[in-house]
Length: 191
Length: 266
Ligand SMILES: [Zn+2]
Image (cartoon, rainbow over all chains, first blue to last red; front, side):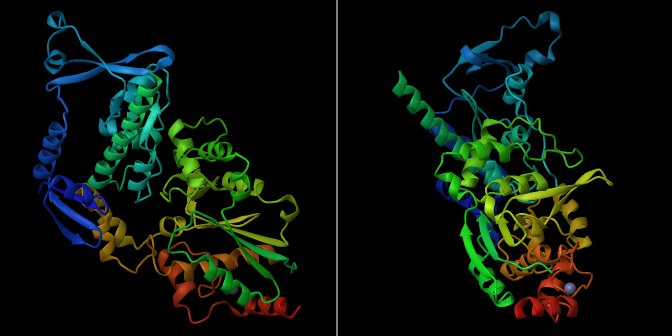
């Protein structure tokens, strides 16, 4: 139970983060789910990531021309309380970039769609069994200020949802991070 | 029977396992009097003219999202789709799996063929890793295809894996695998050999037969044959495909052999 499978070349990231795994087949590896996830979270924290625990994504901060410039979040318990007492104001967090890594839901992209800035494609052709590469190739900026990674990419572009494994998610995240770095450097130059 | 002038082979990001030079060699052997030329990237000419974005946009707009809805011209591609299209044209990625409308794709490739060569005397064959399907008016849905004959004929190295049906048992087990969230690679290994898979070593051999279907389309207007042992057999199952292209004791049936003999005597 609780195993995650990783296809080649995703194991490179497991190596980098020191996540133990076993080879089950040519090109197929398996790791312990909780072990892999906790190491991922820990290494994100080691790199300086701050988690806003018990919060939920509420809305986008939009700037001139519809550029995404942050998110509005709220406390999770607020959604469970009766409306009369949910007088907690949402919090707006401004940022140069937003990365939607919310998985199938693509919550940030969907919000942008509600606002009429983009039209997502839903899920794509169902018979394809190999779409990890496609997810990685489509990872990137989908709208000024907004980068998408992981399964949110499949939802946005209507890529086949079958097939992608944990490995593709790791690699997509890495590509997303590289693109974010490039964008930040570009922005810094302009300023 | 039409006289053939020349055969051109193109590579639109076809699977790495496909040896196009070997297919050219094979065709030269089968069509003694017809020149066979390997041309590489079908967009090569347009790469010089800064038209990559145009074609990337056109290709992105013929993507099929829902196999039960016929393609219409009103699709507006997203930024990431055009970027992916560019990478495909420039050969920077071989990631496949996006489904395209086959006839529209053929029309796009037709545009990049030089005008004087747009005739059935010339056999243009584009080997592509793009997956395409054709609309079935009767069933009101798309069906993925291995090849689509015409000017040019397009043959998909992804379609050869995905279009012909795999053994029934495979689909039953696949459902279980999906429910359990297990990786399909493991399942595929247990069916090894029963179907053509990605980067299959038999790919080039199989594709020789599909190339010949394109040749026969130009020659006599019909690429297919009823004989299950003939390379021109229109296989709907992987098992039939492997039989027609690899296991059958003969390459072509009597009738199609005699066509080739006649052509080579000319
Ligand atoms: Zn025949």
